[in-house]
Length: 186
Image (cartoon, rainbow, N blue to C red):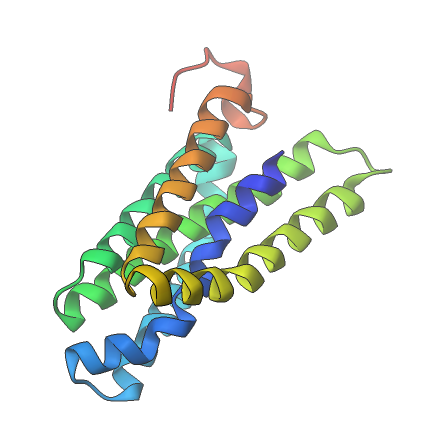
């Protein structure tokens, strides 16, 4: 089931693609400036992967499995609400932080719950889910934007990310460093 959460969280990576030209027109900025929205998302992930891995090892996986999608949702809602290019850039960076939190924890969680015999299958399934989310994101984003306006897709993906957080909170036990400590919500 963690792979379903991965689809929900990663759909936000692709949902922005079909609406980038609309943001460019709305904010009257160059394509390069709007392209920064993609770069900031990816850079947040790149810069934070290792520190989040350390946090995941020290504090456990569940913390990031719950809070990663919440931070992603905040970034998505911020994207949908952005009225200035600076707000859009900040929101996309926040979404990248949340995505990094979730992806580091989900892969580590899968390594924890798998055996040597099924580890590759578990991780491959999750990577397939990531690619599914990134693949369907543009189609869903484009359809929703065409039918209801170009900001709605971000609210939909934000709600989906919150569903992933709720699933992690209610259904995923801790497997990492804090598994031996008393379980605490969140």
